Structure formats: C-alpha cells, structure tokens
Image (cartoon, rainbow, N blue to C red; front, side, top):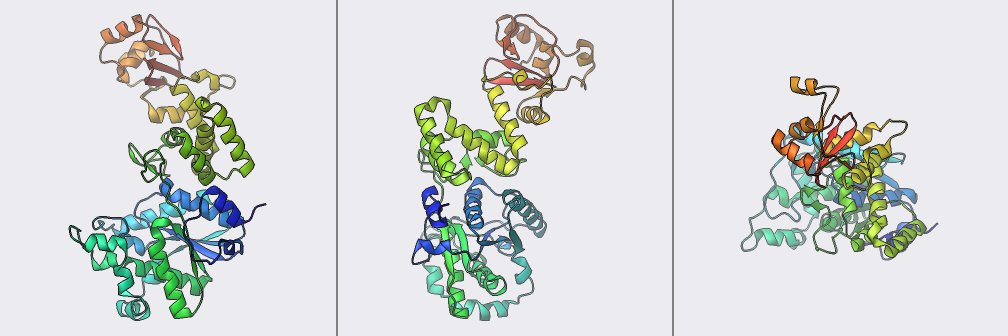
Length: 421
C-alpha cells in the first residue's frame, strides 16, 4: 500500500501545505474539515475536498467534520465581489442538518465526529473575542488578502466589518479544536488558504504549538478554464432534489477525455491499477467513452447509492437510443429506480390512473400519450407524425395509431420522449 503522500501526489490532490516536507502527512494526526451552511447541499466542488478527507481517514487520521453554524451567519467573503445576503437562523439550521446528512452519506462506514462551531461561539461575548482573538491577529496581514484589496480598491463594492472578520472566526475554530480535540491539521480547498493560515497563527501565538494546513487545488475544466462544478444549469449539487441522480450522472458522462482522466483519480476510490487500466482501455477506443461511464457510475454510487446509479445509467442508455426499455426487464419486471428516474426526466402518463375520461375510454393509445405529454399539440399532428414514421414505441417505428401498455417509451424523432407506466 502506498503512503498517503504518495497517494495524494498521484491523484493530484496536492496544492499548498505548511509542512516542511509532504511526507509529514504520513504520520496520523487529528484534523478537521468544514463546510458553511450557505446552502442546503454541498456541490461537487465540496465533494473534491471530501474525497481528500476520505484518503486521510483511510490512512489512519482522526477526522472532525465541521458544519459552520457560526461562520454561516456571516458568510465567507473570499472570492465574492459583493456582500452576501444574510441567511435567516431557520435557514441556517435547516442547512446544517442537510449538510450533516450528506457527511454521513459520503463518509458512511468511516470513523468521524461532526461538530458545529455555533456551539462554541454562541456564548462568547464581543469583548472576550476581541481580547482573546482580535488582539493576536494582525490587521496588516488581513488587509493584504487579495479579495480585501479587490473589495476596498477603486471600483470595489466595499466590505463590511462582519465579512472582514470572517477569517478570525474561522481561525478561532482551529484554535478551539486544537484545545478541545487535539486537532493539529486543517484540510481545505485552495481558496481557503488565507482563512486557514489565520488558525495556524493563533495556535502558534497563543499555545506555542505547531499546527498545519493542507489544501487541495481547485478543480478546473481544462477545456474551458472554468472552475469545475458548474454546468449549463448552474452548480452541480449533491442533493437529488436540486440535481437529480440522472442529471448528476449525465454531468460526469459529458466530461471531456482529458479532464476525465484527472477526475477519476480525484472523485473515485478506485485503485491505481484499476484507474490506469480504464484510462488505457479508453484511449484505445475513446468513442466508447469507457472512462466517462465508469467515472459517472462510481461518483453517482458514492453520492446517491448503487440502485440510483444503475437507474441513471440504464435511463441514459434508453433515452440516448443505446437500449430499449424492455432490455432491462427481469421476467417482465423493470426496476422502480429505472422507472422513477425516467419519470423524473420526461413527461409521463400513468396507465393505471387515467387523468381524464377520454384516457379511460381510449385505454391509453399512442395519440393520447403524444397529446397528454405535450409531444404534439393536436390529434392531426399526432396522426401525421405517426404516418410519417417519426414516432417509435420502445424503439420500433409505428405507422398507425395503436394502444400501449406500461412500461413503454414513446419517442418523437430522437430527442423527445414520453413514458407510460
């Protein structure tokens, strides 16, 4: 088994660190990593850092996972061009609960502790914070931060005292976790380097002790140069209500070859031999997209579970014409996950629950489905498309109207689908 430093170097997780030698991380210690409840879900940007944490756990480190109930009340200003809108206390509470649930999914079966920094800030007075923290923090160092310069410089939108103080709050988190839990290492993304260093300085000044920061590089799409984690529809969320398992799977499936070779090392727990074998196989026949398919399935399984991953995989094959819906039947039974995935993505008619008297009388025929789901606007249009061979039922062209039973997939052209259940 490779050492942690070797593993992280090969996978592309190494960015900046305060250790004199990278090999220092091979010695197990107590560390923490946190996410602010600015939303009720993490994104795949957060997931990259979470995968970094997974490797530390697997190599014997003790891990503390923080939900930033206190820092979430202010909001991290780093990288933001203007002031954040404050979240209500109810929003923050709901977001914290959602994040903790995602921690438990991503780190299922692993040993970790979840903490909330609101617990140690809620009873701390303002003067106490200034004496114990503010007195030991250099204002000059804080003013030198790039995002501060951008906000207070010419054309900048300015920065409030609250957001300016954010790094002090995060720095105190590290100090508190050092004192109470023995944490001597903070893991973070590259954009958190400045905030994290504040904690290192506080521990050294107030405790005379050594503490360290290790950051992973931000993931960037090599083809576009854009920070990874965005799609045409916005951020890619881990919450299935915001990014469905199917769309989540599709995101990874559509990654370009060069980027996919990097991402499979970062976002999966596959071993080096397996990954190199997959990459070599893909390079021989890139049109098969073997690399992207394996990446998509592994990450979707990690976040949404294996059953949802299979549902997304099979639905993808059906909707892109690589398979028929009945190809996935087992003695005429098709998995609920597959049908639920399809229904979440395309208009659906339930044959057992007709919504109109017309549907009941017609017993669900193709023309009714086409009209009901919006694939056509009129009966005449439906007849015309059927007669011209533009309509298929479960992959087979029809030239006259017919009745269908569920589950069936009706397709107009190649891109427009409707499901009958």
